Image 1 (cartoon, rainbow, N blue to C red):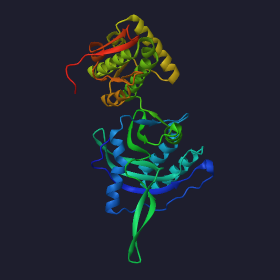
Image 2: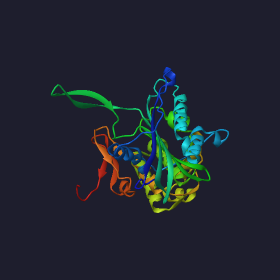
Image 3: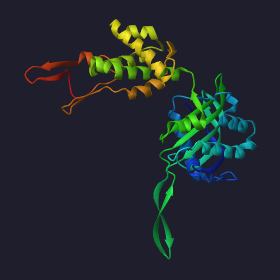
Image 4: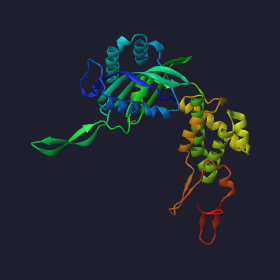
Length: 349
């Protein structure tokens, strides 16, 4: 989604956020971090690397007026007047604090940074980053004491994984500023995305592709699998992936005609689509452009393994739509009184 080759941190401040539910108190810094070269070179990729693989972006949301969205307002002010950075970094932490309405919300360090040189859609833009460090790891620190070395255990931030973070880019479209977010400690799905940032997915090809693939995944699990069996489910998912790979855009009616040979299955898919939209309060587009990045990510969630009660599993490649029908046969053995699968192959790999 972004490239960080020319990115640099021009401002950074660290605060500590407490838990409102436990009546904790925030702790604020009054001045910016002064990096040495080593810490800067370690911090920059730690903060930005996770966003290189993000496929979808968000836009700010508010029930009355998007200008009243707190994070939208604070970052907009920072872009317009960088001298407000420290003041608004504290406002960000206070807003985050107000969302900690349960005991499971973790305290932590909050880094607010101002970045330049973020490459987004072939353009260099500024960004405000907000990062919450919730988990710290134990490590050994050696030290010299009376001409002998000793060791003590200390806690610190691991550079292997960022807990929570977002980038608000100084780049807008018809829906507003572009927001990217990650959450690797997703113990409360509402806390970071909905309550703190108050954002929703951008209404673009990424969202449309994800919604449609999610529809197909759930349809395969709730309708195809119980009605027609696991082999048919795997075949449907593989054919769905193949359709998305072969078409630059999806047409709902064309999809049904190509994927389903029987009218009964077309009707089942039509009925389930309406149920899925109502259940999830979303609209599945009948026509949209395919996002290859989302397809690559979402197809990894498709379950195409056939697990048997004899401790044998058959895994079908979701990128091979003809394999389930051509090389896998299901039958029943009268002598053993058991079902069986017959697998055809030329060589073992």
